[in-house]
Length: 424
Length: 154
Picture 1 (tube, one colour):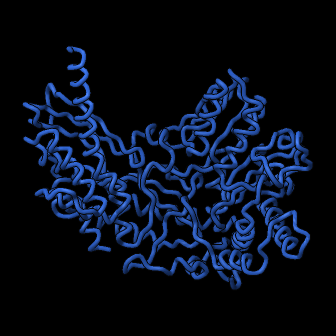
Picture 2 (picture 1 turned 45 degrees about the vertical axis):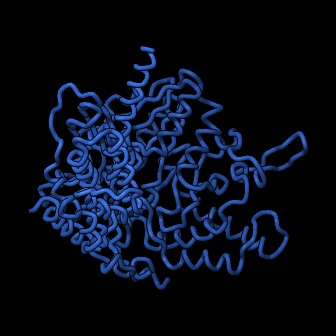
Picture 3 (picture 1 turned 135 degrees about the vertical axis):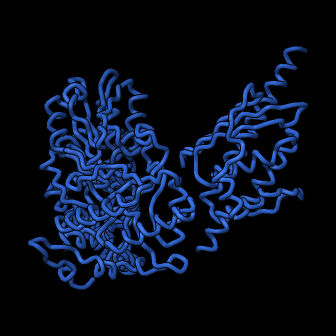
């Protein structure tokens, strides 16, 4: 990977990233789309992988491949050690929690489903309330809609205001005494809004409710301390933070996880099985039935190293600067409206926008023809789109390897799109 | 890629997108049909007047991308005066073209042939199809309603 320290440089007391040097670590970023160099601005969907992640997974299959926790041979011991070593790193990465509190899942969606099935089906009754927000991704929406339908529980939503932030004016009423769970996103994948999770968590706990945070968009982009947030559950995915697809994390407080029933039954998650009886394994394996994504865990480790070496504070500062640059440049285009807060202190780098005359899908296709990858659509947040009176937005989302030049290309191409579609 | 882009957004398609036909009010329609592409959020509202089993007039209100708007506009141009059976056959031919296949019948599809370029953009095929499936569903609902009317009179 080279010396990552050289990738940062100091300026006005802050360490800034050097995205050009970072780019060199990502093989895919040197590919071309047609005859154009790739400009990748779809990082909220998934990020690319550095050479260290790709080679770690390759090495794993070449030299170590074995099932975990059951073999008594060298390969199995090495695989198990690597698999569990990543778990330790994850525990440290999100604020130094207990290793037992880190459960491997496929992704953030599965992590939330685990809570909805194991905790929700045991603890949510008719007449209970579950509080969500109007800006949730389907991953933090549909599991609760299904649970409410099944149990007769009530769903209540914290609204958003005109500045695309949560309106907390009636939070004490919305999070009522019969609220059993408050589940909100830390950072909106559509609006970029960063929510005041500490404050909402306090209110949730004061009413006796548990607090789940969907961190799919936050953990990759800013320092996160789940203990400071006092989250009971915290969910995120590896693939949005340089790691492989197919592996995600549920953090849960040990005392709560201990009281929960398993989610997936089978091998690995048991301590003893007879023909008419099964007892569960200890945390965290109780929740990890079946052979897990071992190569995924192995690949996640260098991803965490890469981010730690850059420093999450530095990554956050880089994104604040580049988001401010993007918003300023997009605001120069009269036909473009940014759907999200402008204040970069309270937002991340997933920047949604619409052109008043060109459909987001036409924009995305046009940008792709110039090598620029953005996302267009409802971003798995249909209720939010409806709430905003939109059917779709285009979204440019940045990461550690993006540069102001990438944004210049985006803005230049958006101008070209006006000429192409609107004869301007 | 640019060449490819121009094969998607052909001049004819852009012309229909900028000046969509069939965007008007239509009183007392025989067929009303609505279609949605939940994935893209495209929405289409369609009204059809029939006379002697043929399409007399059609109005289309489409909220969507250039491809879905243009496809609806071309549909409005193409189906006037055609019988319901003919409309269904044209719709099948369009489906085949969008899949990159040769249609079973040799139609003179006129402007509609411009949709052939969409076949190279798999995610956009459903945009081009929306107006056609909406129309065919509307007509089929109308036909089954008519059949049940006949059934009740018997």
